[in-house]
Length: 57
Image (cartoon, rainbow, N blue to C red; front, side, top):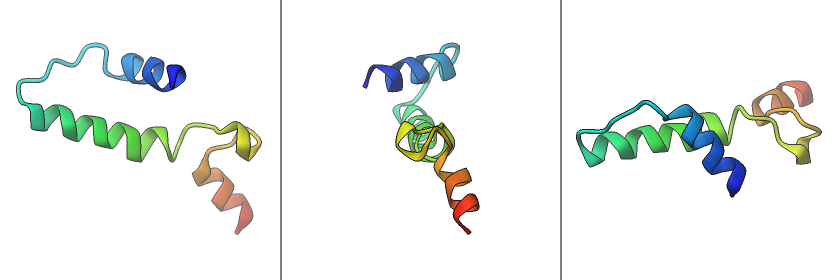
């Protein structure tokens, strides 16, 4: 959990949100698009899920 919040802080450090919906959309994109799909995972031998799928094909 700590690495997730560290990553989130680095990615969104300079963003200021005027609407809650704007923040929710950015958080969703960060979690579902970047954090879960593109960062390396130790359980996948330190490759991203996207790269793991490409290698498996």
